[in-house]
Every structure is written in C-alpha cells, then in structure tokens.
Amino acid sequence: MDAKIVALAGGSGFIGRAIARRLLAAGGVKLRVLTRNPGTARARLDLTGVDFVQADIVQPASLADALKNANTIVDAIQFDGYPVENPRRGLTFERVDYGGTVALLEAAKHAGVQQFIYISGAAADENSTHPGFRAKGRAERAIRESGLTYTVFRPSLVYGPEDKVVNGLARAIRFAPVFGVPGTGRQKVQPVLVDDLAACVMLAVSGRGRNGTYDIGGPDLMTFDEMMRIIMDASGHRRPLFHIPETVMRGVGGLLEKLPKPILSRDAITFVTADNACDIEPLVDEFGINLTPARVGMAYLAKK
Image 1 (cartoon, rainbow, N blue to C red):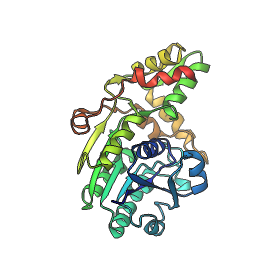
Image 2: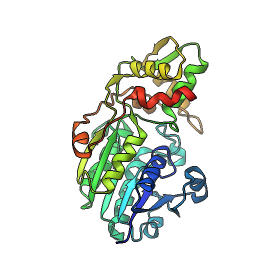
Image 3: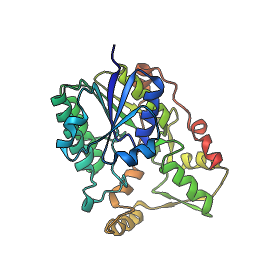
Image 4: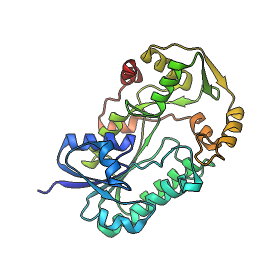
C-alpha cells in the first residue's frame, strides 16, 4: 500500500515544524511542505525525506500542482509578525487565515484531497469583533461546510523550545528588573506544549477525530500571572510583576501599528488579554493523550 501523502501548509513555522517532525517520526506518510520560499523552508526545517513545493495560499493558482495526489492537508499557516497585522503587506487575518483557508479548500476539492486538518485557536468565533478570532471562526465554518473530512484543533497558547512568546517572556524577565504584565494578569490561559499538539495532528492524520472540533490546552488552567510565575521558576529568574492597564497598552499599540513594520497593534493587545481557556475532555477522550503540565513542559527554559 502506498504511503499517504500529507501536504503541510505552514510547515516552516513554529507549529508546522513540530508537526512535520512528528509525522516523519511516526512514519507511513510522504510529507510535502507547501511554502512560498522552498530554500528558506528547507533551511528552517532541516529534515530529510521532505518534499518542498512552492505554493502561496493567497495565490490560488499556485495550489493546484502543489496538492496533486495528496490525501490530506494540514493547515498550520500563520503570517509573518503574527498576531500583529500588517495591511500594507497584505498580512491580515482576513486575507491569510480566512482567505487562505478557503483557497486551500477549493484547491483540495479540485485535487481530490479527502481530509483537511486545521490549526485554529481557542477563541475562534465568527461573530467576534476581533479580526483574528472572527477570521478563524469563519474559516472553521468554511471547513465544516466543505464536504471534506475534517478535524479542527483550537489550541490555547502554544509553547516550546522554538516559540516566540514564552521564550520572549523568559528573555524579558532575565534582562528586566521588573516585568509588566498586559492587562489585569487575570486572563485565563491553558498553555499547551507544541509536541502535544503535533501528536494530536499525527493521530488525526491516522483517522482520529473525524469531523470534530477540539479545544487543546495543557492540563492546567491558570491566569497569565500564574503562568509568568511558572516561567520565572523554570528559568530561575524571579522578578516583581506589575500590571499595565489595557487602555494604556492599546494606546501604545495604536501608535506602533502605524509603523511600516508594526511591532504592536490594538488588536494584538486584545489578543493577549483575551481568555484562552479550553475544554480538553473531548480531546483527551478521543485522542487518548496525556497532556504535559506547564511546569514539566517549560523545564527547557532552565537551559536558556
């Protein structure tokens, strides 16, 4: 029997790289990474046995050949600078998260792909006022109505040795005498180790979770402040915390989002101050996974 061909969109990103490694380690699949820059993606991923194919989800014509003979698509795409949009460069949730997913779905149907796996987000909601949560919610609806077999994962904050968020927080704590927490610090988070998410994707490729939508977070629901204390304990750098009012951060974000390459925006502030709690019971029941506690998963910070 021929190996299943899995087309991975976003395979050179943080989450995509973890998925690629897990799929190759499990065996039984041929992995095809869809990327705008095959050379850059090959350097980032540095894995043997991967076929890198030039394709761009915002250029639908490029997708037809990229999906030829594929059995499964895994959509793990995030735009550069995520979650800070850059409309000047077309890097928006509406264009990439929603429009890109619709383009992949249409190309998949024309290519005869049978299965679509989507990495969404815990706060996805097509009726949300936040462009990111709304775009992911709309993408989910398009997937459900596509007629393809699908699995949607809604992760809370995803972390790991190569992530930008938790590593960035640990780095800031190391070099700052105090640390400013966005908002009240009481927003709920349920950080999930990227390897756990990748393991669930691998099981979905194998047939688990068909036509289901699953929250995925770690086993511990905590506040942002509590997560910061875990990061400090893991990294060995204790600092006093203080809270920056959301209104102040949004004001700063409003100024910085006007830069040619914005490093912060008002919507990004909403993103980091929103609750990201998960109901993980359906996921655990279906996939049988032992999710990694944050204190265990973040132990790598001691080496940073």
